[in-house]
Length: 379
Ligand SMILES: Cc1cc2nc3c(=O)[nH]c(=O)nc-3n(C[C@H](O)[C@H](O)[C@H](O)COP(=O)(O)OP(=O)(O)OC[C@H]3O[C@@H](n4cnc5c(N)ncnc54)[C@H](O)[C@@H]3O)c2cc1C
Image 1 (cartoon, rainbow, N blue to C red):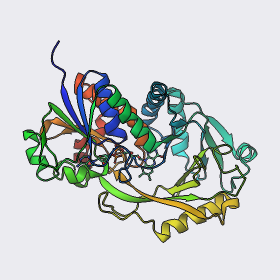
Image 2 (tube, rainbow, N blue to C red):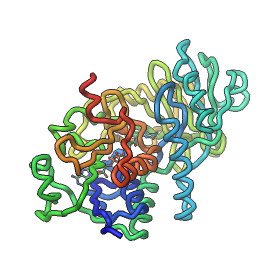
Image 3 (tube, rainbow, N blue to C red):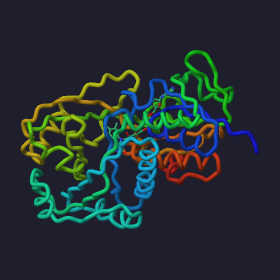
């Protein structure tokens, strides 16, 4: 038997944590590093909750990846005896004449075995009278989809990694000359160097700063504001007990997660915000995004019209130009891999990304061509 390949994974978010665990389980010797820890408040994976859903429109790899992710998340829950996947259902409200996103999702849901029902507006009104369905023509309900506890799941993945014999270190990689000097080993901010056969950088919104030549503006972090509104006392109509995760994919892509875990009713606008610095950015929501959230709430969930704002969060998306993931080798360093570009939808895919990375690095299976860095040349 040959020596185990030695791999360093930088970043313990959804992509890096799962990549480290998948590599370890397939026999590599893995060191996982993170500057602030798994699911930290600056990381894109650092929120309380993230949606897991199969509807993704036509002609895309993500419904299949989500179907596989469901299996891997469930296996991990069983392994760690801890729940972080909540199958509340996901409801898509279709309000546009152009329903090609929703219609185009259906064959892929069928093909990959993600359960769904097509619902008339009347049936939706019967099931969820707390939603004001004005303008909604029809809907898709994914009964077995729902949400993941994001920060907790990232921490659980790293705990499983450590329990399986992986080495985890809280350490920051220095970005100074990294792209030029990585062939001499991985430079840490404290002056030490780590040497491995291969490196995976799963640094989310930081990837462009770490690799200004290869990645640079290919991944743009944008500020995203999230709101949690208070539900009426003693009333569970706006909690996960009585309402599924919901989304409306129209002029704006609005989505939300009903109250859970003692928190309020979460609502967010998927529209890309201004550019954001994930290290130094101040995490304060803007009055404009609050206004949009309140307006939407008053229209779609009228009983929450005057609901008090309980909490806010600012996170950042790490957007690729076409919102496809980035999974590829660094063009100048064949032993350096890049995994990122979640573009506002990557969390659920973490386990599948880990599997794709492990197969690429240990077996030479190439990732989907849509995830390549070189696709920039075609734009
Ligand atoms: C508001 C919001 C809502 C979202 N909603 C959903 C959703 O509903 N469903 C969904 O599937 N996805 C959703 N996403 C997207 C998803 O959360 C992200 O795509 C995913 O979490 C990205 O994970 P990552 O591992 O690539 O990055 P990150 O989670 O950012 O992890 C990168 C890690 O790298 C570390 N790091 C960075 N630089 C260094 C360094 N120099 N040295 C060492 N460590 C370093 C960081 O500390 C961090 O922990 C949402 C994102 C946001 C912001």
